[in-house]
Image (tube, rainbow, N blue to C red):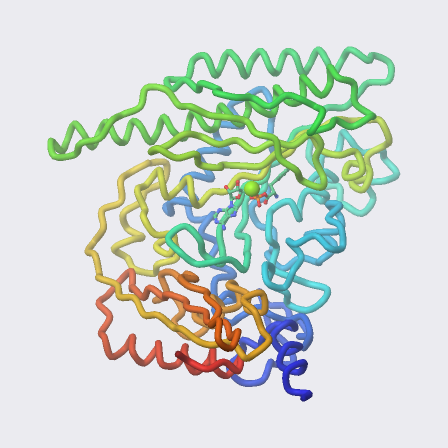
Length: 482
Ligand code: FA5
Ligand code: MG
C-alpha cells in the first residue's frame, strides 16, 4: 500500500544522477559547493563542459561569431564594454529573483535547470549578469550607490555585451545540447533633469546613424511584421510614449544591423563555394525576411523576439526588450534617471548555420579535424571529415499502475541516457505513449539515436549501452520493460 506513494515521491522529487551516492561536495572551477539531496541535479557529464570556454576561442565557430557581433556593434555610435569571463555558477537569486521571475515560474523547475544546491545553479542565461554590468556603467550611478564595485571596474561606456556558456536541462537532438552560448547586450541613456530633450536628441541621432549604416549593408532586411502595439505588450509608466518608441527603434535597428552582417557573411561564403565548386547548387537569397514578434520576459516591457526566414523556416535568434525600471533601481540607478534596452542572443544556432554544422555536439568535439578547420575572423563551410553512421534503439516500458506519462519527465529520461551514453547520444525522442484499455496501464517508448562525431561505433558497444540504459530506467522508475 505504501509502495505507490513512495515511488511517486521518488519520481517527483527527481532522480539521483550520480551512479553511486551523491557526493557531499562538488568542485566547480576551483570552488567547492555543498550538495543537497533534494536539489542537486547537476551531472558529472554536464560539469565536464564547464570551463571549455568555446566562446573565448577565436578560432572556434562560437568564438568567431562572438567577435564578429562585438565588432559590428562597436562600429555604431554606441560603445559597448565586453564581459566574457563571468563564471557559470550563479545564485538562484541572480539567475531568477533579481530579474523578477515569480516563485512558480516554470524555468525554475528542476526538470529544466541544473541546480548545484538550493542556493546555486548553472546559469540558464546571460541575463543573470545584467545587474552587475548595469552597475559598472558608472555615469549612470549616483556616487553613493556604486561603492560595491571597485572603481577600476567601472566603465565610461553606455552599453555592455556579455558572452558566456549557459546550461539548460532540455531534450537532446541536433539542435539541442545541455550547454550552449548566449550574448547579452544592453544600452542605456541618462535623462538630464536640466535638459529633458538631451537624451531624446541623442537617441534620435543614434537611430539616424544606425539607419544610415543599415542602408549601406549589402544585405537588406525586409520586415514582414513589426509588432508595435502596446496593448498586449504594455510599456512602463515611467517612460513616455516617445521614449519607448525611440528606445525600441534603437534596439531593433541595432539587432537588425547584427543580423544583416551575419547573414551577409553567410551569403558571401555561399557565393564563394558556388564559384569554386560547380556541383554546389543552392539559391542565394538577395534579401532577408525578418519579423518582430511580441514576447514576454519578467524584466523587460515591452518585449520582443526576432525571427528570420532561412531555408524555409522561421529561425528565432534573440529575445529582447525595454529594461524594467526595477532592474535599474536594483543596479543602483536613481529613480526616473535612466532608460535602457537589453537583448539575449543565442550564438550556437547562428554559428551552426554560418559554418554549415549539422549537429550541435560537434562544437564540443576535441577532434583536431574539427578544430583545425576554423580561423579567426573567417566564415568557412565545415567539411565533414567523414560521416560515421549512427544507430537507433527503442526502450519501451509499462508504467506502474496508477502512474501516467505526466510522472515521467522527458528531460529526466534524457539525463539518464546521457549519463550512460554521454556524447554518443545524438538524440532522445519520445515516440509513443498509449494506454492499455484492459488494465489502464500506460506504455511509454523513447527512441535513442547513438552516433559518434569522431569514430565508428560497434553494434555490441551500443547494445551494451542500451542494456545499461534499460536497467537504469527500470531501476529509477520501477517500470516493466515491454
Ligand atoms: C532568454 O534566455 C532571455 N535571457 C533573453 C533576453 C535577454 C530577453 C535580455 C530580454 C532581455 P530565451 O530563453 O528565449 O530568452 O533564449 C534566448 C535565445 O537563446 C533564443 O532566442 C535562442 O536563440 C537561444 N536559445 C534558447 N534555447 C536554446 C537552446 N536550447 N539551444 C540553443 N539556443 C537556444
Ligand atoms: Mg525564446
